[in-house]
Length: 132
Image (cartoon, rainbow, N blue to C red; front, side, top):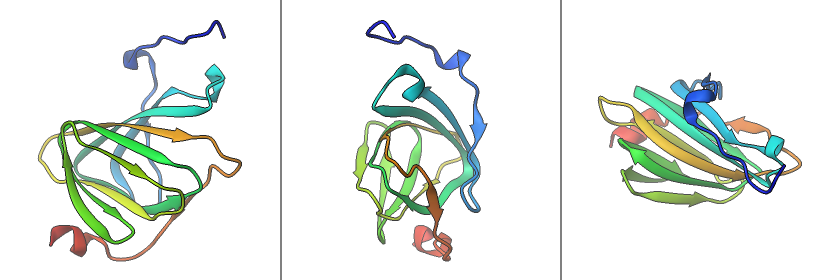
């Protein structure tokens, strides 16, 4: 690497997120360890009625909402985030993100690399909690 990496989202493949029962969610890996980075920057699109199922992992996560609104659960605390909002989620904290509008939710998510990059889904009926 020459000290920097430049790219454009148009040149990055979008992949469906397959965490538990997640639906309508797509990810683009923008910056990764392939560029010798210590962190990854990802772009997510969650379609209307889509969500990333409640889960946890060994890495930190920072989200920045570019467009749309979502309901976020972090260890049982529920909040709404919209354009311009951001959140930091510590390691091993269970969390879930749901699109709550009739348009795409778009956000950037930055994570650090750890020895264990696995994701553990948590199965519970969180849909009721998000609608309260």
